[in-house]
Amino acid sequence: MKKFISQLLLIVFLLGIAGFCTFEIKNYYQKNVPREKVLVAKVDIPSHTIITFSDMKYVMLPMDSVLPGSFQDPYQLNSRETLIPIYRDEQFLAPKFESSPLALGADDRVISLPTDIVRVDGLCLARGSIVDVWMVQKLNPSGNGNQGNGTAAAPVPPALVAPSAIVLDVLNNSNVSIFAPASATSSSGSSNSAASITNTNSNGSNAVLPTTVVLKTMSSYVPVVMNGLGNNNNYFYLVKVH
Image (cartoon, rainbow, N blue to C red; front, side, top):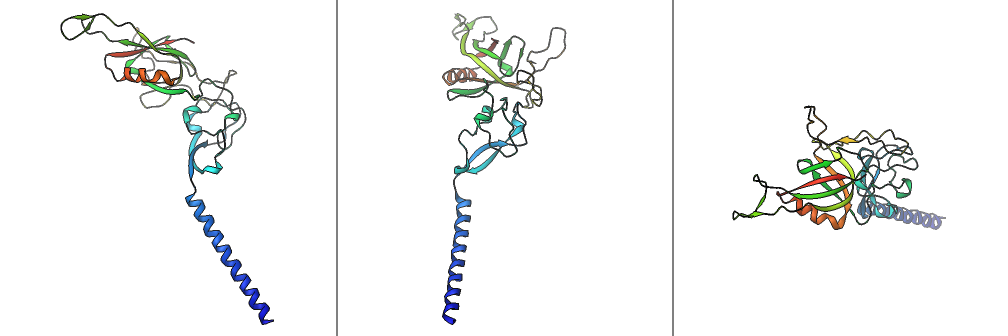
């Protein structure tokens, strides 16, 4: 009988040690497992709702918990329409959204143009507007380019540097979108009303004056645009295509 009790106590002791070791290994794994930053829903989002930056947040998840098709770039989600409801803390997945021209593809990039060097033809833009980005060389006060030796240089013709770029957003001087809130959608799936980006009107009334236009364009166009941004002799002219 004593031998049986001794064996039983030994088994209980060994099981206790095994349980403790399993618990410690699990804790170590949870603390040290590789994690990845993923976008999830900040609130419950109904179907057929236009997503905005305020609807999303980052969380750190174990890599084996990150689902295929999840998102890490908020610009890939902003202005997309949900196909089905997405619940709080649920990962955003591509199949849960309607197809959208605002979403970034593998060869797409986002560029931002400050309004102090942006001239717009078409008076107003909306999310999804298609624009051609032209780069124009500024003229000196005399009306011509100048080579620095007194010889007037011939004006450089405008260059189309980013054709068919897509407007993702227009931000005011507080870095807040000037478009209408996206809580209510229209039949076309977009709640973004067109926003004026003109300067003071001829009658003296002030229109909306944002500070940055955010565009989606092909990666191959980005170097030329960035070089132009760094040159004070250039400005950009946006021509609304659609």
